[in-house]
Amino acid sequence: MARVCVVGGGVVGLCAALLLGRDGHDVTVLERDPAPPPPPEAAWSEWERRGVNQFRMLHLFQPRFRQLMYENAPDVVHALERAGALCMNPLRDLHPLLTGGFRETDAVYDTLTARRPVAEATIAAVVGNSDHVSVRRGVAVVGLVTGDPTVTGIPHVIGVRTDTGETVLADVVVDAGGRRSTLPGLLAEIGAQSPIEEKEPCGFIYYGRHFRSGDGSVPRPAGPLEMVNDSISILTLPADNGTWGIGVVTSAKDTALRALKDVEVWTRVVGGYPLAAHWLEGEPLDDGIAVMAKIEDRHRTFVIDGRPVATGVLPLSDSWACTNPSVGRGIAIGTIHAVALRDLLRDAPADAVDLARRWHAATMATVEPWYRDTLAYDDGRLEHIHAVIEGREFVASPEYEMTEALQVAASKEPDMLRCALDIAGVVALREEVLARPGVYERIVELGGGWRDERLPGPGRAELLAIVAA
Image 1 (tube, helix red, strand yellow):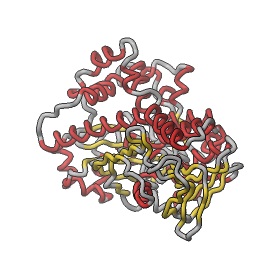
Image 2 (spheres, helix red, strand yellow):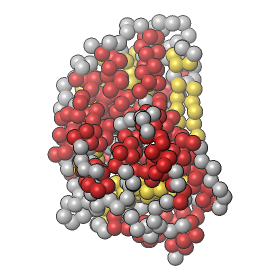
Image 3 (tube, one colour):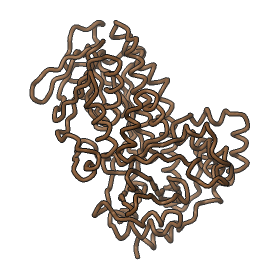
Image 4 (cartoon, helix red, strand yellow):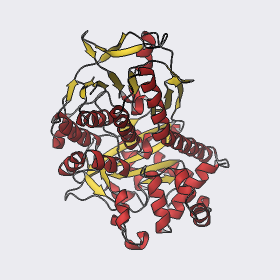
């Protein structure tokens, strides 16, 4: 069994550590933020995680996350349920006329969802009680420790150096440092070739607020959880213990909507959309509006022309690639990556170069397609928003056309709803769904006129009037 050092104790880092520990590896998690997780019921009000800028923003744990945890660590699912995480399934919760009735196979869409602090505190408690895993908080990694390379010119990492000068040795270092991972800089310091990095501003701004009911219930959805409305999208996401979040997503270039950071403006705007307005009927958990901006789409390649930039260190989840969080896929994709890491280390090659190559191959096979699919949607949605703002014709890519057409088709036929949930829930890739017999044709038939079937709500001019009122 290997000594594994996981850098970063967020949700994916903790899940990876748990899976590796249960395979018998000796795992040490180093987390920069010092505050220990409180009990889940106190996590929202008491836990500070300065290293996670989206910690109190809206989160959705897509069905694939629950599926993978139930298959590999069912006690995580049970712990989340005990902590009050909501289990929802559109095929069970919506009216049978919309779904055609619940089928046994629809259990794949079961979704456990909770506010991020509650979910992370719960998972941290499970990990903290697990054998072979040690979580050390308030420990920042400031450098990589190298040993004798197996190939000339490729640095070999054998551990990390902390901000106190301590050296933590490991057979494998897993970087789960998230969006703010400093791995490229650490690699440069040991003379490694720079990874290939694709980076561009994501282009979205998020304005969110959480609410609680008095009786433990959550509002009944009147539309999709993500409602695309011309130049804005509205997220209405149930959470744990009778709480939920509402988010308004706009373009970073839309200066006219920056007034959404004001509570009164934000409330007027959400109230102007008939399918979202009833979600305001609760007690706010926050005095103001949480704003998240300057989120980037970023992708890193650590094996170039078959040659790793370094050995002994493996990037995981957002350290490797991250995208627009509004579609809620990040944690599910990261969990897919964590399971792939566990599987790789079950039969890890002795040769460090071979290990790095195999991790690159596993990454390309398991999570790269999800990154590209999400990025294509981001690009299309931003172009759509900007066309509305500028009052010009929107020319959509074929990929975006099919995404929007499927959303309309999903509102008209249960089987199309299942196709949409497969993609949104990280159950099946878009290309896999479209390759099913008859699906492409049915989407075109039912949703080809998606531009003329917009959700109810104000157009651009009326939206600006609501903001300025």
